[in-house]
Image (cartoon, rainbow, N blue to C red):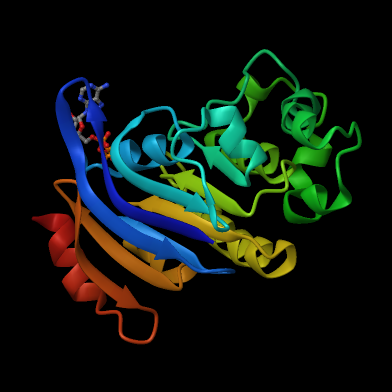
Length: 229
Ligand SMILES: Nc1ncnc2c1ncn2[C@@H]1O[C@H](COP(=O)(O)OP(=O)(O)OP(=O)(O)O)[C@@H](O)[C@H]1O
C-alpha cells in the first residue's frame, strides 16, 4: 500500500534519512521504533510532503506521489497525524473533525468516528484546546480518518498520554485497521504500545532501519536494548 524506495530526505543541505527502502502492506500496522532524534518525524514529514525528498520514490497504492505537495498526497490516500497532534485549539471538536471532511466533500461526520471515539461525541461542542492530551490524540486520529485514507501516518501518538489511554488507543487502531481496511505506519518509543498495536516492527537509528521483526518473531528485549542505547 505504501512503497518507499531509496528515500533521502532532511533539512537544507543535511540529509537525515539516507537511502531508506521499505513497504507497508495492505491492512498492516508497522511500528517505526526509535530513540529521540533518530529520524522518525523526518521520515513522516517527508512521506506526507512537508519535507521534499532529496532522492528516491514514494508510492501510495502504486501511484508515485514523490513530487506531490501534501494536499495532493492526501487526495492520493495518505493521512497524517503529526507529533503533538496539532488540532485547532480554538475550534470545537466537531469543527476540528469537519476539517478532515473537506477532502470527501461531505458535511456529515460518519457514525464510525463516534463508535471508535465515544468521548468525541460527548465533547462535540467543547473547544479542542480544552481536551486532555489523550482526547486530543483521539480527535487528531478522527480528523485524519474522515479523509478516508488508504494509509494513516501516526507520529508518536502516545506522547504525553496516560497509560490507560495508551492501551485504549492501541486497541482502537487495530479495530480501525480491521473495519476501515487501512494500513497504518506508526512512529513510537513506547514498546508496550507497539507490541499491543503492531504487526511488524522496525527500529530506526541515524535515519536508517537497523532491525526488523514480525509479530511472530519479535524479541522485545532486543528492541528495548536498541531503544535504550
Ligand atoms: N527543522 C530541523 N532543521 C534541522 N535539523 C532538524 C530539524 N528537525 C529535526 N532535525 C534533526 O534531524 C534529526 C532527526 O530528528 P527527528 O525529529 O526526525 O527525530 P525523531 O526520531 O522524530 O525524534 P523525536 O522522538 O525526538 O521527535 C535530528 O538530528 C534533529 O536534530
